Image (cartoon, rainbow, N blue to C red; front, top):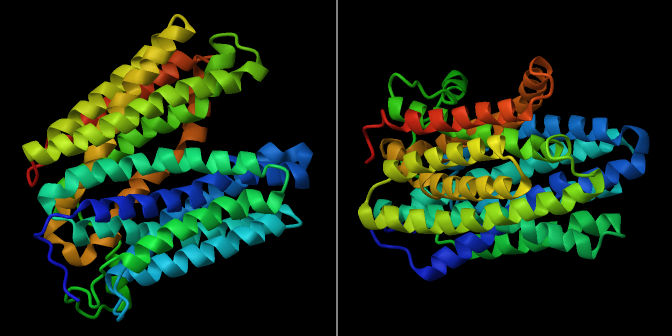
Length: 410
């Protein structure tokens, strides 16, 4: 089957693509947010925090390495079932089974093993899912689709949290329920997906060429290098606020620990609502105007401004204003960024999933670097969280500036 990449996608495609994307985030993010922490408290109450950091950091490392690898395998898959569908189906089924291993684990080592297997499987799905955008969606329609994809992550997180709350007393179900629901959503999309039966023409590669393929020379493809740098910088800013905001509320605003969850939830809800709205609006407008850079640039500026407001907030109400501005910036940036990057990669359609997997490294790597960098800054400044968040804002500002040299997209 040959896909017509000049025909605008319809709302059925958008709805099913968003449904499947929400499902994979629901299955992947819920364990890292909630279920693994609860499981480790059962196994080792005295060292649960240390064990959680170990499991999640090693799992993040597996995700960083595996995503571009599976992207490359998906790009070069020859199957009557298509290039992307086999990886989506197999990855979701294997990931769900891996989470059963985590749920039934009797020690921390088995939790770690199961979570690494889950990261492998689900990142195979992510690599194939993100490549559907350049595969199926014409360039003039990608802003709208990019905006919809961007809001699937917070929606998946929220749905996963609700699912776990309903079955919190049964450990197996805290893993299995969001996984099965997410798996069902992704499989519905995969089975409907009009996937190419054969990939674009790809030459045979030697083992050496295969390893060299995981490096995209920024001198040959400078726009891709700048796009990855921009994504890395804004993700670094985001990682700092996500990791240290709870401690800021306690030490900077004097909230008791038992009140932090409620205050944090309020801030996150405000940010998420505005992020979803900004993502959808910026994506659609970027299609109408056929401009990507201006929305990504403005998103980085708004996000930097929001982080500065959070850093300098004299009270909790001011902090909420900062989180709202940051939500607008985050949504505008990520609602258009993926459309921008796929435009940059138009000259490399045979490697789209692998290259987008490399972009995902820029998105994931800051999560591994943040604990060490944040601890160093706080140690040097005597626990000054505003300084840390101002540095995060500078990183977001630099992400906007990194977009300006791009020449292959407008």
